[in-house]
Image 1 (cartoon, rainbow, N blue to C red):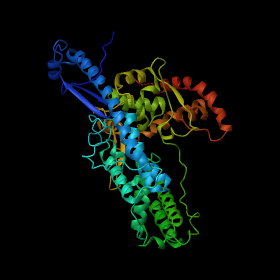
Image 2 (cartoon, rainbow, N blue to C red):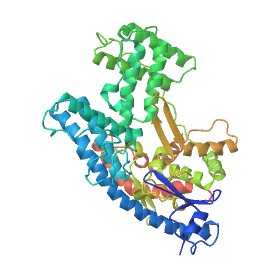
Image 3 (cartoon, helix red, strand yellow):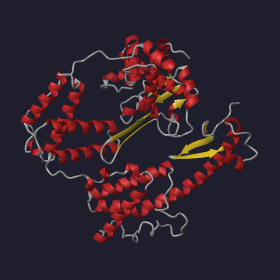
Image 4 (cartoon, one colour):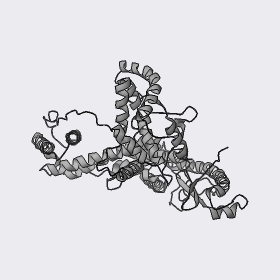
Length: 497
């Protein structure tokens, strides 16, 4: 019977690690020996894993008991302070105030669902009157019923408490000034301040998970290019002539090879959207009449893919974990975010399948749930490198997600991509000067399937939604053919096991 490890062993540090509810726990062999002297047989992984298992089982029971206490504490904070403010804002028709309280309520519920501890600054679980702490946050006495109209002093006190709660939330990184309409910087009429205001609204969409951090960062860069490329100071000066001249700047950059046509088209699209927004906000007297006529043509080129021998060379030179990343891309059409988001409940270990929607379009109802039959090597490496976390299937050495992105307070995007870093380590070892982007692996598999089995199977492999009702007819036959297509694809790649 195989050994069961409830924690992860770090050979260099000679310690056991476990991540749960966003917190990492560790135990050295020395600590385990003091606590479980009868179970530690040596300083190795094999000699200490029984003690590590026992320690984690005891710790897990303690955490579950604490979760129940924390859930009660969170609930008290929510009922006593945040929900009364939200209800008051609703009754008084104060949308900005309601938005602030509702965001806090949602984040508290997120803490409850994730089992995060309730900070003692918010709530002392040892007191008897079932009320949040007053001394830590200087919380005033409980206000009138929310249905009653509060006096200004009571409302101000409750708003202050809500903000104090926000600051004490363990997941406060999700709370930024952008969720509060009063924190949006006002435009003074200049182009620079208006771009800042527009960018702030884009960052809100990131925090509502409507846009990726990368997309928000791209919009910010596009508008900076626009700001430096036009000879105006005030946003009210944007007119047909300004757009035409900037359009010429972009076309010249594309013609001279300083910018790709795709990038030029994206910048122009962002600037046109920004112009429409300014007009809708009343900053422009009229919408420039040429806004719909300005375009940058992009010549359709052949889809770029990997050469199979090139991909085999990269795969053979990679370590087991990096091989797993490459296999998931070849076998299941995944990109880095898909791998980072992969959950335990999306894997059928018995039947050897991954069943999921693509991360990028998971919220779209019409996107199909695809069942990918795993190649033996993919399934084997997935078993070897699976984490013990209930949230995600594969994590990095620190127990963190493989790919993370966010936006700093200054609006700049920050990203961490362990999968891309692992890939570039292999390409550097092979001295590949200009490595192809990882997204081309997905295109390579799709192209092979399309050429052999037709576009319907390739579309299902990519997880694309049907274009219309008539196009939905491809799903059922494509699903029936996908297993055989993936078997053939594995033979076509002919990777060394």
